[in-house]
Image 1 (cartoon, helix red, strand yellow):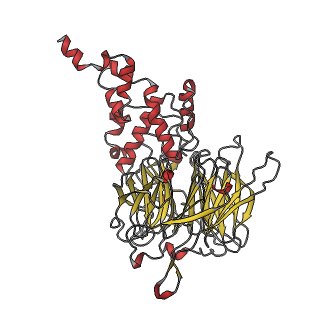
Image 2 (cartoon, helix red, strand yellow):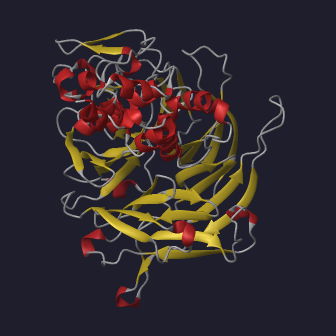
Image 3 (cartoon, one colour):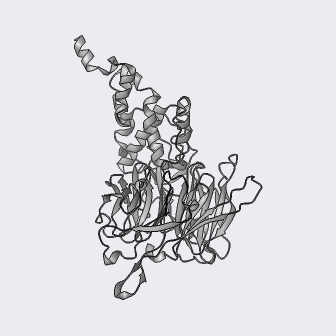
Length: 547
């Protein structure tokens, strides 16, 4: 009998270092399963040391390897991780965890909710029509917990996920005549907003001080710079703003952050790259095919842009260590990568979309509606990337992908033509849910998507700003909205804390705790809000591609 007990619990008889070595090979969910085997196993699995690699890996996937957690300071690594996780989401889901084990448990519970494919809440932030025209773009600020949306008439709205109210914390409107919002980008302290219309420029906004009240803190305009053609896409690399323009220009600007808060911003032009326009040579006549700079991604020292193909801007002669940025080189060359299969005639003119995923890979939605994962960019030029098909062209039924977003475990797409639909995928391309409905009645074209570790946001031509919340049901819902059986909603204060429960109780059946049906919910009805329309919208130069 004693021998059987020793065989049955051999892990407990090992030196602690060897037991930890074995447990380190398990994923998070298996670790929590093992903690229910015996008291001795549970005591060993209370150690925060076991959860450090998993949490660091997740953080690196969310941040794409930027601003990494310093692992050399072993005595402070737990404090670092807890502090970093408090800022990776625009929700308070990870905020009040006191141990790394508790943080890891919340991650497992959250992953179960995403895997179910069913959001716990669906909220239209624009239910009272602060936006009166088609909402074109959206970004999520995890530091101040904001959803920032911009529409076709130049209005920028800052929605807080902390205040528990459905009114924005700030509304900003461009000068008259209105300039439509064409792109937005965030870095640590700044927001860049590109416009098209009579004025073609990028406006720079600075984050309000930390001591600003939550109900009013957002961003304030501090500077601007002009661009040669309408901005189509935009990203930040540190304090350098990279703006992709409609006619193929890619502008690199240092936004000119002053040394003192009292000084003014002084943007500086660093580099201009002209991406060649893709053409078709039928009947010996060159005609424009596709849209330029539909999406951007920068991976030092390479810049990736997309039209109907993928273009890579890189140094003509790059350093071995890649320590310099692209704008620090004298000569830049542009090379293209095309899908192996030729495009059908119906696919010509459709742009592909690129989006970073993980540390050094890209998701690519091709014009034929297929989606690939591309990597190996660190090894050399883009002609020979590692390519894996995740979603075949038949999945979207011929409708082109109009928007694409990803977090550390999942990605979501929307189609830009009928049938309009939003689809949630796992990172291996498995369809999780295709039944997301942006609005009641006829589906509307989704213009933009953004993903947070706990939710995603979709904005569309019908002026809706829909927040799809996947925070586990037992947690206070995002923004303090509590659903009622009659479909109405009331505002409540955000949850002050989250109590951990056993994995079995919270993750065995995520869909069983979902709120009641939301059909005919007033959150999605705009008949009770008064509309006052002033002037007309500015037409996007690439609006036809979104119909």
